[in-house]
Length: 316
Image (cartoon, rainbow, N blue to C red; front, side, top):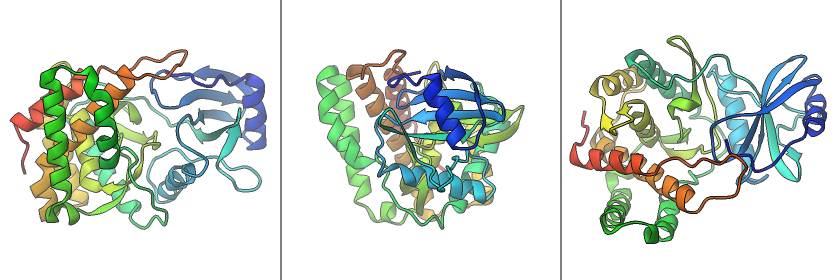
């Protein structure tokens, strides 16, 4: 975990009581994640997650928090932000924006099988449809404009082969984004970071999606590609797992069939998803922020995934 902002028990207790969530009994940092400061907060009424936001602003955050409320109200198992007596779900701690949500049941499945991948595909499609009438809009802040801004910053840290790959793939994605098929992709709110550590399971039963703080309006296919690039990849090698991928795709398409444009651009969006996380991991690795427990992810993993997506395209 990255602890950028230390939260005292007194601060946490005051916030919990202002939200009518009870008296604080325990507060501990959550392992995992490098964007925000996260704590488990246990009160005499239940278990919650307290997040202090390090990059997102008070102006940006209502999109994420109210999206979760919107999805929760439509039966999607996501954290539901707690409101104060005035109905506000966005709060302030140490001068920074903060939120409190209920802790989801279950645990992350870090070695998923086909049943887990099928469950993720099914719920992802349901989430996309449930969010289609959400009335707020915000772009994916880690989308193509951010890639174009960040690649020049990380290029000096790469060897020649890596730099060549990064430049060429960025050019390819800019080309794809200008095409008619890309313009035709169905869009709406996306999670954009639904890795296996952001989903909860009880056995094979999916109990929740969480960590929506990279969400934005983007192509639904991009969201699906991000999932395929994590859930259906052999982590040590970066190789595609056909059985898990088919389980996820078939379950997703049983709820929301893919359009012709989506079928055409699946290989390109798988490359886009790999590029996005290679760039962000390079950025976190070579230009880290100070934090008491910061452990940036290895960027070479998504370099391997990207090369695999280029060399062996996945088609429907």
